[in-house]
Image (cartoon, rainbow over all chains, first blue to last red; front, side, top):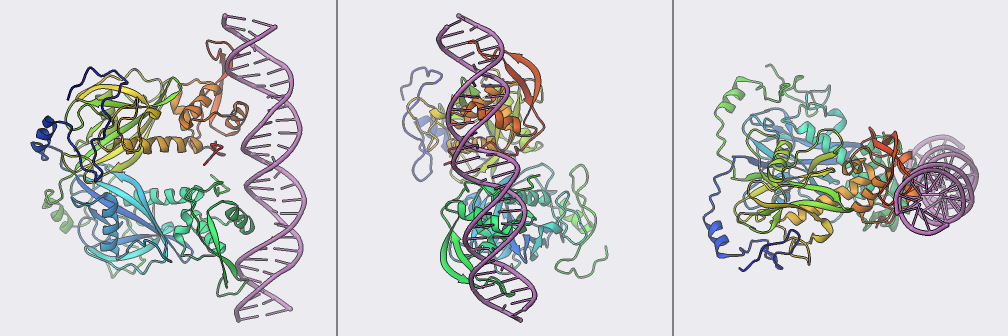
Length: 284
Length: 284
DNA sequence: GGAATAGTGTCTATTAGACAATATGCT
DNA sequence: AGCATATTGTCTAATAGACACTATTCC
């Protein structure tokens, strides 16, 4: 290919080297030869895993899914569901697969059960796993309407733990909570912080309830995740004033076993971000 | 260690298996034997790299640092500075090292030049690198007062490109901008979006100016990153009403070569998050 | 003086927070 | 009736957006 000296800000060529299917199209014979001869063994040995922070609300409490480790290291401690990324799969695919394998949970695509999953952060401190160098990509899932988790391979049991029973500082035993394996207390802490923050400016709270839901149920999601009591009337007013957050479906139903006026039912709207946001009032 | 059958929510033990230096303390002889015999070769081969999105403001434009690739693949295209994570270093350390090696930039610890670095996201699509499976942990750096970048190993040249000249959809040639290598257009897009969002609710805008600065300079940061014009008087009022955002240092200086009343000078305050936030007005 | 930038004051529409009053179901 | 929850309305303080006016410097 004929090329002159490139100016600092000049264009180089006008077509992408990436095909529609994501594969690479070499731009020259020399590049094709280079790729054919490339030796993939000349890199530092690192294992890549995914871990998933599954948050859901049970009995009014924000809970995280943990599995008890049946193997060394950290045998008997509780860990996030996760495992190796296989050579062919994307990171997000690996997260979904591990969730199904280790905890028996299929992420709902649609329907009554709601769900959301996003990448959280990556943890790669050299000493975080005593076996070898492990870089772990953590995902955050917010789910509702889950069946009781069932333990899978390598896990003694799976259990939803209230996050307030977990020592998020160092993962050690804290009165009534679990001991956490590896640096999973850090990951859980980051996931809980992310969820708390995103409830302010996104519509993710609807991932914690099954549609159709009442505004009272949605309010109790905020109260469980934030750990505060919200003003009932103002909450309703603000949610309904936020365009696209929820849309009414018309029906009504008794709100609780204890009686009370039946509440209007809603389903999630189109909005992803909330304008204006629902701020936590005592912000700090 | 004597242990009974563990109840579902019962405590297991009351001391951490993590030492203060981060190394692991096995809880039993069996676990020690397991770790000594562990074979680290039984994992899928993956390379882990770091890439850094360095954003800074030059001539009123938000710019990103790119290096021209001197080697295959994507030779001649522009890429984010980055490279392999070595076995002993943390991910964040690797990001700082690559920035110094590939672009000649040392992240300032303190002083007039300002800076911030944080983890952005991790990219691990199986086909993103034609050589082999590469999982790349991207970092986002917001810097000011940088020297002209110098190219390092494996890079033809380093250059700050205005982000508006870059095709963030697929990285191909876009009139006057660079062709981007790999999936780096996605990473740049995510970094720019993160920076734009965080200017709203954090004090990170001060990372883009050198202290001491005027409120006019700080406003021009917001205008460059968001690409909008802000109301001058209301900006001043809101910044000064946000506790801990900036603190006056008393001195004044002419604001530009073209004249005008000298402005009060400020330095960054203690606040990390802004309460209340500085919202972009036309928010969608 | 004119241009350019900075700082202060003020008016109005909107919003947040608090609270009162009413509606509708359960036991 | 008494309790529990939902819905509507209203009052007030705070905030956002817009704009007028003054201050200080360079040309």
